[in-house]
Length: 132
Image (cartoon, rainbow, N blue to C red; front, side, top):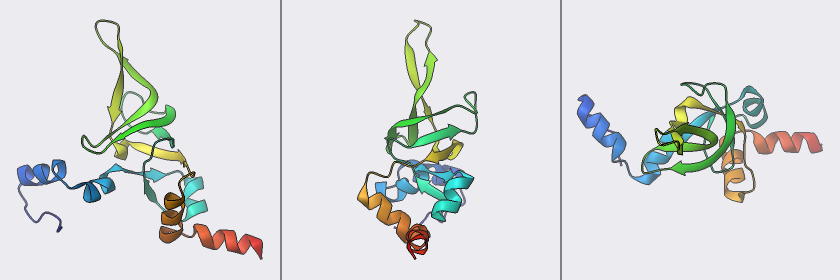
């Protein structure tokens, strides 16, 4: 599917919220910390449950936590420990945009995720250099 060609903001907004999942996944990626960039050779990567992130913008700026949920349909991320109190006193998780987060640690238990890191960056190459 081609990217949107329209210059109208309303058409662009509609495309953003009605994207198919294989294109919407790209909107749920976040920048890596400097250490992870050097290690994996990748600037940004998609968020997954279990990743540790730091919040870069908003009222929760500077706080860290693990990703609890990645919601593709609403295009937001829920981080453990980031809650807001309602008037009734009930605590509710705050949805955050992936662009406002920085990946500090990756959850690397998934083989497909490791393969995609090797495909995109220099992760495999650095491991081979260390063995020689």
